[in-house]
Amino acid sequence: MKGFDRIIAAVLLIAAAVIAALNIVMLKSEKLSVPLYKVEISRVERELSAGAEPDAADYPHISSIRLYDGSEDFYNADGRYVIRSINGSLYRIDYSDGGQENNYAPLVIMNVFSATLVLMTLALLLYIRRRIVKPFNDISELPEQLAKGNLALPLKEQKSRYFGKFIWGLDMLRSELEHSRQRELEYARNEKTFLLSLSHDIKTPLSAIKLYSKALSKGIYSDGEEQRSAADSINGKADEIEKIVNELSSNLSSDFMEFTVNCTEFYLSDVIGRIERYYFDKLSVTGTDFSTGSYSDCLLSGDPDRLEEVLQNIIENAVKYGDGRSISLSFSDEEDCRLITVTNTGCTLPDTELPHIFDSFWRGSNTGSQQGSGLGLYICRRLMALMKGDIYAETSDGCMNMTVVCRKPL
Image (cartoon, rainbow, N blue to C red; front, side):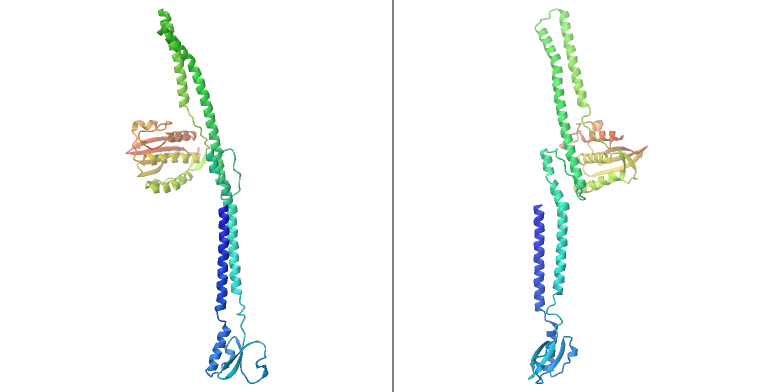
């Protein structure tokens, strides 16, 4: 805000300096310019010097030309006049200045116009300050607060045509981050409780196994029947531990991420249009040929934002793991579905690994040094399942074909 206020002050100072300079220039030009009546008097003097008899009617600003005849009113008449001695005779030349000596109309017009322009500029700057700079200044500290983990304070709603949606989106981000942190805390608490319970459940059979094993090693059970009974007890306790481990594996392999999908009806062109606008610019910088095939627009059933997220995940994978030559989108229909296929060149994934690419935390042998979590395609599959759709992958001729199956409304 202070910076913008300094800009307003600087604009006003510059405007005042320019107006002052224009006034000085115009005043000097007024002083330097020769009034017309003086020009006409000079012409009359030249004609009289040449022996001619000029007629006052020929000059707009000359009212009379009189030769001194000894009369007393030669010097006493009212009005403006000059007396010149020409060829030994005195001449009185009466004139009118036509208001030229006090003609400040151009100067006044210039100042009124300049003042109006300055006021309009000032009004525009104050409008920008109130409607754009101040609302932006109010939310400029939000990213820093989010980075510090201060997520509890909601944003104030503002009816701004410029930042209304932006502020709404930032508040949604803050709310989502707050919910994510609460979920993380809940997961951490559940995980700690689960591990404590697991350690308690394992400790009892494990102690029994150690007890029986020690007894057998020291020969406490000398009878064959007692030894078989101890071995059976060890086996039973081992089965208990195996059961606990299986339950643990089952819990770890279950879905661990929650997704919200708002299913509705939307046009395919809305999603593809946003994808095109973003990736045409982004991939043109890297030199990747990005193209979309022709398609007929149609209504789809699902969440347009989530479908856009799915396509973005697929294209980002194509950028990371392809050869950067070409990425394309093609479209086809199958029964009551629209199929969107993302194809990229430079696929080096072995066919044997293809069935695993949608598993959570799985990364193929073609990832190399590329960073990743192995969750991108897993999230795509989850989202498409929630939208009653599907996703599958194929490889052909060194290209990866990732196809998204979108449902049409019934």
